[in-house]
Image: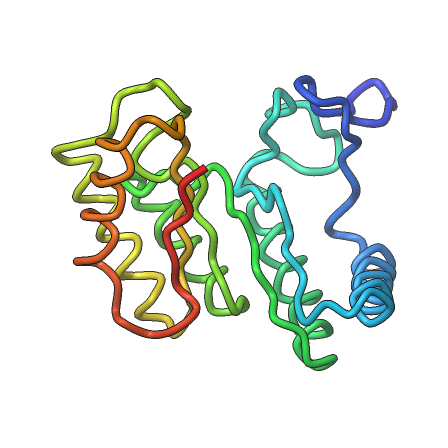
Length: 192
């Protein structure tokens, strides 16, 4: 950070790494490939591949402005995905700070999707369990994002949060996902 301290997410204490470092990119990809092979996995899921620093760290990085961070994440995903795919692995990313109604976030999401096997959109149609389900312009933008990501040739997974008893939310999420789905394998709705 600007005080020379390692940057930690404020909500979970995880440390941010320098995604712009080619040394880190190479080491990360090599470690993931080795772990996937060792444990018999055929793919890697990258969590919190955010278009902004996020988790309370926005504006805190000394090396990158928030705008530079977006480009840095894109470069990281492109570099590590190339290595993972060359090793025969499926590459999925949970992309954060990608509000479908934000034109820049949609453009950045489409660019990122071109380097992935699966693009995951968390908080699809709802921010958290118990919050209202999105409708109107937010709903339409969410469906448009799904269609835009799938148009890149990348599978789209949508994650909606809710209780096991909230059948209305389950039906709403499923009924919303199906019209936007292009019918290809790999895309899926996840209700958690």
